[in-house]
Length: 98
Image (cartoon, rainbow, N blue to C red; front, side):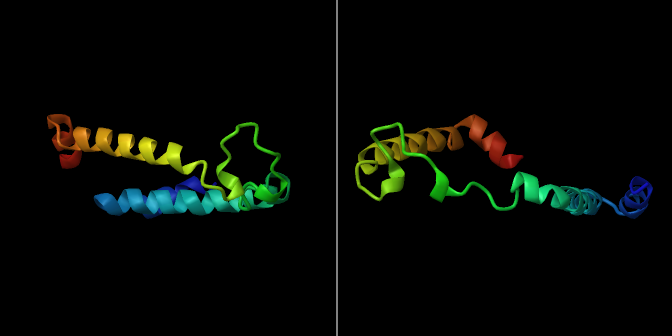
């Protein structure tokens, strides 16, 4: 019932505007459909960390301590080096061009 209206609006646009309008109308429809279920799913509220159980790991980044820092910094540097290597490779040039 709604799809002919959406098709009518989006088909008369050209280029990227057609896809932008289609995606925007799909997002509006998604909000309209999922909003009545919000009281059951808590979809817009996310996960409440106040009710999260205690961490099962000895490294807990949520307690405000600095014990997570020595693990996070080398991982961050490693990921940055991998991404940098990919970006400056021939494959990265193709990905950037796309």
